[in-house]
Length: 108
Length: 117
Figure 1 (cartoon, rainbow over the protein chains, first blue to last red):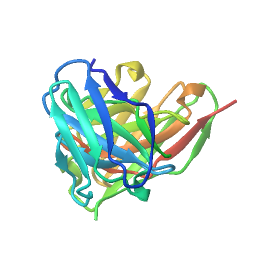
Figure 2: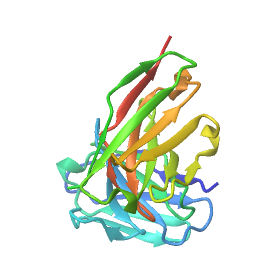
Figure 3: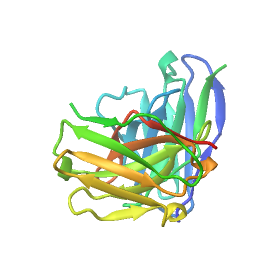
């Protein structure tokens, strides 16, 4: 099974900060990597798929990069509505998927 | 617009079974697979399994093999997830999610299943 490891598990940031979250796969997954945002009490929301493609309607301050085993989600200028938990997900081994453990972005 | 509407919260005793439904609308039901994902209180997302609405093929997470069954009813555009032999650590919010070939682009609102004696 492919394991996904995110870092950090949590981070504190201020509005306007540049935020970077990393995700590492236990084996090469090409660019089969997705990112989700989950706000408290809500279902996850797809932000980015195939490592760097922005889902329709997602603000351009979100970006994704990487390939192989190492991936990054970047928020260029953190907004108040971006405080949430972020999950990566590998889709290399479909139809089975694995999530990372999550990264909580909190107010500094 | 695409919507996935799930059934309401359930409280079950250990050893019982639960069946959660997920009614789809706003798209051609047979054109996409459906995954089920659960989230224990305060924990991360756990993929449970996937069903091809087109032909009924299923793939389940290894840890749930033998306890979970996923089905669909194309006449009502509804997917079902049944989990048997419930334990306290099955207490979680259960989500259905539309899965194309890669990512899960639409999610249900979640169904809380509480397992308690």
